[in-house]
Image: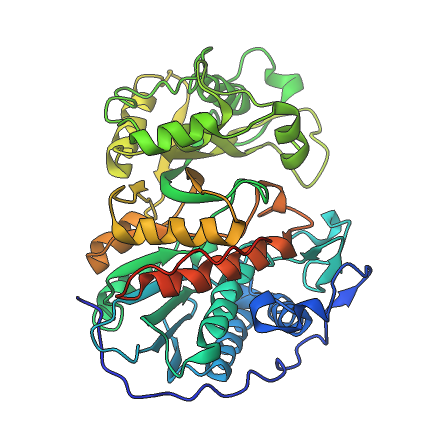
Length: 499
């Protein structure tokens, strides 16, 4: 096995109290029974939730240059938490941008497999004025949730792994498998230095199984295992119709309006059936395996519940497919941002010379990001009109979709672990967003699994982000069980636990 290593016995020190960053978690409810959750098997207890709150209070916004020091502080905080847990190796990996964290705890058995966990500690930008339930970096416990930027995406996910490992180590001096973490600090800005890290530290990151923890559950009532993620291509389209903004009183009706032209072009991107019009866009798509097809078809879904959970007014999309199918089995195209004219002052009767759109394409197996980028260029070439210039810039941080091999033993082990945590059989689903599954699979030459504690209603990237404490609790149970299941021995008998 590629990631195996040797290790002597390692004594786990007491976890102790988390370092003070912003004090303990503020609470406006009494829902959490401290006595019930004081035992290891019922993690996370209040001390653990306070630990997560301390990390969430660090504003590690990777897109803000003024927060670079905070991203570094977040990385150092995580290293200390890993060392308190007992990791013999935990360190910050510097890049030309923002730092990542690496940790390794070898298994007691040199023949045991190695698990590499990937996630991120940077968070999405915030507009504090839009937050209503809490402040972005002053975590709040309310109605069974922890509120704060990064509580779900993805600091809560990382801490679930750490809490699960502590549970796993309750009666051991070393984990049953070699455990490695790669927690990067630039995921929210496109993972611009991830490829360099994977190349420069290939030996450290060698693994038999990779697990990406930056994904979502379907619900707290339906146990699911993510077995596929979509890829992504992002692009910026800029249209110009004049050298400068023009006074409409002088030219209206006889001048090129960049905003109108941009709207025309963007409208052509998706047809009336909800299908993307890029040439050859659907040619490479493969059908999901029979397991995922059957599980998705059987998944309970109600449109009213979906709208309530996500806050959307409707669920338009490609005709002939259900919402779950469109989320996990079909590609999509979104306009993430539109800009035109003056945004810092009244329009003042101007005809804008320039307009821009940020486009986002989600891809499914067997589509390839480079091919879709070429298809987008060809599509735009066929829709240009005289009197305008068109500038298409495609981001270099594209990602391919990835599907976990359906017969991989590690996927089966994860399914057993999730089923045990919920007390019911787990279904296979996909993930609506992108993740570096294909990139990690190529770099590590290992199968990639996906596990998350997020939910569609957790408001990732929006105001009032939060995470369900019950999702964290279920995640700890499943991940602790998974470490046992992944060990080279017979699967454990069902424990019969229920949330």
